[in-house]
Picture 1 (cartoon, one colour):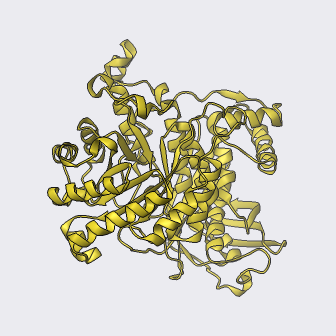
Picture 2: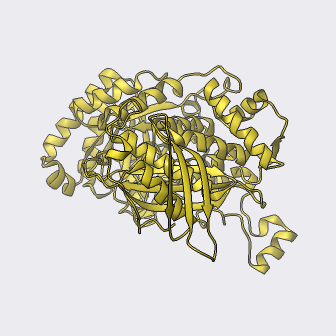
Picture 3: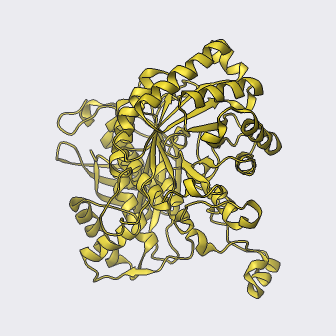
Length: 562
C-alpha cells in the first residue's frame, strides 16, 4: 500500500540527481551510468526519480525511456520481488513540444509523471520569458491541462517561487490545480530565501491556494547561500510532503539539497519532526560513492553524512568520550548509513554464480557478457588480493560500467620514474581498427608521461580539468581508484542546454578507473573519458570520423600535471 495515501506524515523523496544533478558542470553521464544510478536509487527507496529532460536531445530522451522501462516497472528476478517501483518523471518546459517529449519517454513506466514549469518571478517574467503575468497564467492553464490529458500524474513548478509576488503565486498555483496538477513544487531556484522566509512561504501557500488539499506540496531548494537543507526542512515543517533532492547535493552552481542530509535529519530527529521516509538508509553511502564515481565529482571530506571525516574523531577529548560511550560525539551510527559494513564476501576460489549473487545484492544487474567480463577481472583481482570486500566489488563494476563504448583499450603499460632520469611511459593500446598502437613519452611524472603517450596515439585535443586518486579500502594491497574530468577542445561539442536558462557550455567528460596499480588505474580513467569524447564527436569503430594519424597530434601537454 502506498504510504503517501494513508500516512499524512510520510515525506516523498523526489530524486533529481539524473536531471538537476547532471546539470552540475562536468557531471555528464552516459546512458549506462544513468541506468545503474537509477537502479541504485530504486534500491535506496526513493519515491520519484526525475530521470532527465527529454527535450534536451534524442540521447536524453532515450535515456529517460530506458530508465522508465527497466527501473519504472516491477522486476521479478532474485531479490527484486519486494522492491517498491518508483515514479519515473521527465522535466518539460511549459510548451507542447517539451511535454510531448517528456510523455513519450516516461509513458513506458508503471507510474509515469510529467513535470512542467514556468517562471513566475517579476525578474524572470520580464527579462527571460518576456511575458506579461496574464500570459503566464494562461500558459499554465493550457500546458498543465495538456500534460494532464496525457498523464494522470502531473507536477507543476513556478520557477523562482522564492522571489515571486505572493498573491500572483497563489493565483498561478490555484489555476494549476484546476488544470489538473497533482503535485505543486515550490522551488527556491537561486537559493535566495532563508529558512524563516521559506517556511512562511509554504505555510502561506497552504493557507491561500484554492484546492491545495487535493495535491502534494513539494519543495526544491538550491544551495547558493548554503541553506538548501535548512530551507527544505523548514518547508517540510510548514506542511510540504515531498522533498526534491540530489545525491551528494550535486547540481548547478552551488548544488541542490542533499538527499542524505534531509533523510538523516528526519531519521535522527524523528521526535522533533514527526516525519518518515521510505529510504533504506543503509544504502546511502554506497549510492553516494557510485554517483561520485560516475560523475567524477569527489565528495569533500567534511561533507555531512557521507564525507570521509563524517565519523572520524581525531581530537583526544573526542576519542576519550567515544571510548566511554559512543553517543558522546556521534548522533548516529555509521552502520545506519552503510559505513563499516565492508566485509570479506568472496575468496579466490569463489565461482561465477557467487559473484552474480553478490553483485545483485549490491544492486547490479549484469548481462551474461558483462558478468563474464566482471568475473575475469574479479579473478585477476583475487590473484593480487587475499580478501575481496564489497567496496572492491563496487569499484570493479564501476570501472567496467564507466568504460562505456570502448574505441581504445589499454593493452600494456610500462613506466620508469624516480629521482634519477626523466619519467618515461610506454603505452600499448588496442585501437578501433583492431591493430595495436605503441608510443613512448616523457613527462613531469609517471601519470603525465602516461597521458602524453596516450595522447600521441589517440590524438584528440583536450584539457584535463580534474584528477583524483584514493584507495578503495585500507591495506597495502588496496585497489586504487582514479577519477578524471577533461574538456574537449572542440567548440562544437556543447554541453546539454539548461532547461532553466538556456545556456550551453563546452562539454566535459568524466572517466573512472580502478586497479591495484594506481598508474594503470590512471590510464584506464583517462581512456574512459577519451572514449566518451570520441563517442560524442561521432567517431565510430567501423570507419569513424577519422583515424588517429589524420587527427592532430597533441604532443607535450603542460596542463596535464596530476
